[in-house]
Image (tube, rainbow, N blue to C red; front, side, top):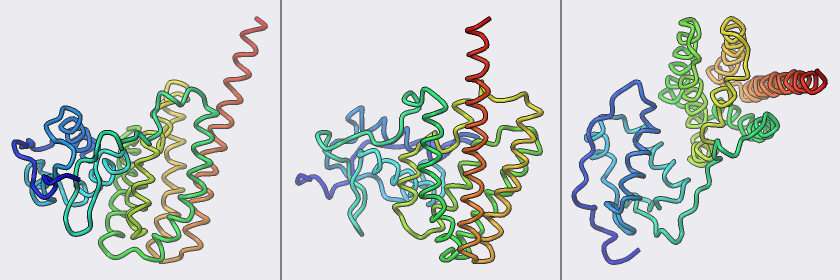
Length: 260
């Protein structure tokens, strides 16, 4: 940091964000654009939480998640009790999984294995530590997912928000940061959607996911840590098995085409 680190950067005024965009992702995009364009320079302090909430028209949760995502990307540094500051460009690094890197279902399966290792424990911690506000967010996210599925939607945004809520409920700020590392690959069906089944089959699949979510959130609501871990492990293992089966079908189709 240089001598300017205590001063809020001048000349930034964000317009309110409008749904149905992913508010956290959109706020990250806008702030990152300010940094990369040089309007926010190394050492500049970001506007305060209250200022960002007012300017962007979002909640404190969205602001905190956006700052955590920027920190995970190496764009900002945070100082306890002081605020978030733009990082030196020489120290920045892109640590999110780039969807362009995910060229095969094998890559997707490897990410799911990574998620099983971490999200299983996250669910258990969420059950043990969630406060009323965190639990309300988890249940609201689950209800939003259910409604989207019944409306025939892909429910990608709602699915992501449920996992965000569970990570936040751990009370450990590093869990949400890891979620940002996974980026879009947290919900792989949005990247492999052209290879999935017809809409009717997709809806049936999402209803199974809804039931799996219900077991996870029910255990979290009851404060049953081991049951939450088991439910999350079964949910992600089922996802892994579904994509493994899909990979097998595609491989068989390609082999048949080669011998046609």
